[in-house]
Length: 232
Ligand SMILES: [Zn+2]
Picture 1 (tube, rainbow, N blue to C red):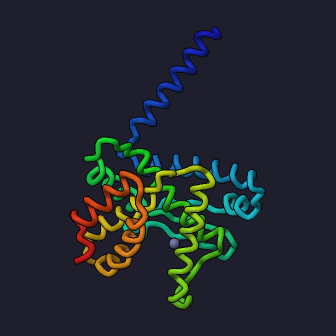
Picture 2: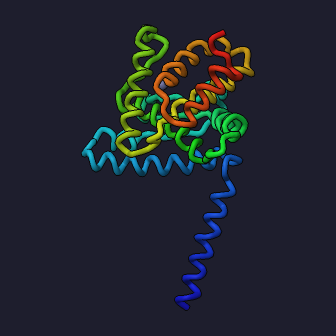
Picture 3: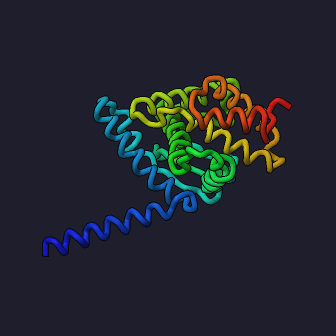
């Protein structure tokens, strides 16, 4: 009986692994939900390790929604409602676009691990949103516009700090992949033309400090010489 049970367990485990493999980038939403649980678990551990009560409370109270109503250009946003509940909304359309971008633009590279790239790009987006909550860096229509880039920068700095604390994306390409996927989308959507310059500046800043293959592939072949031609 024991052997049979063990075999059954192995069977279930094996089947589970096959199911997970089958998702690959064809099921970006399911993958993103899976990564959300994993990242939250890791962040809860970190909150305990660092005795960071604020981080723990944010993790406990923030609801993460995957939204079918958001456009790909909206990527993600954070908010606090009237009952002090925290929310992070992530655009399903952006996640689909991210997986397409990785498949179409990055898989020509031999050393590519598309699932890992998707994960780190997604972590970048999600951690950035957690950063807004951790720092209470929110703004609305009444916020003086000069403060907005500062809040955005602080949220991203927080995200980069956390990536280091949890030993995630040590090669440091999550940010550039998440930004370039948005740039890629903007190229085929004329209504996003006005966002391209700002996006280009952010990517140039990232490109100035690249050290990893994937990031440098994006910066040289896609940005500088390639299909996006940001300088023009
Ligand atoms: Zn932001």
